[in-house]
Length: 247
Image (cartoon, rainbow, N blue to C red; front, side):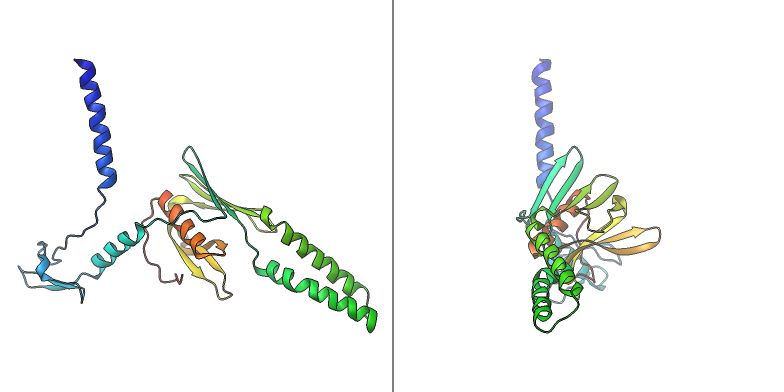
């Protein structure tokens, strides 16, 4: 008799867990801010985003409630992992590996350094110029060409646990490793910089006040949105609109 009873309890727990997992609210109930009574559907004006209370006749905005419902519905569509990003879970830690793309001065050097070196070599043999100019520019061009062929090895690691979010660049290339307290990360958002680079940014609520810090630059919007999605999901951050976001 004890054994069937034990099996029944375990089955009940599994069933309740499944119901809880799938019972996310896709609706909003509207309550009057004056008398706190529930507002009937026929008293809602969704076109103008206002409502009228049938009890006390107060008219009020329902913009926040409608926007919140829109945000939840938009976030239901998961973004699939794009090429160039890998996820690794170990116990309670999440490690994200992002292959770096050619950007900034590297992109400029790879494109223009070989042409500039060839031009100075031509000037050296035709009109004459100090030898150190074509030599230094040629060495610089070789350096950028070497980086171009080895860029597939360049990676950024984002390691997250219940206490910290750590960022490592390998090779470092004069960039410092960064660490942030996970509890201080308030929101993530996407932003195009004036030079056109797309970055994933974080809002940090620290002791010095709220700060905006760039997490990483990426070359596609799908990578940016995927990183935002996975990090906010791991840290249990509800996504919301940020005025600085422009992507």
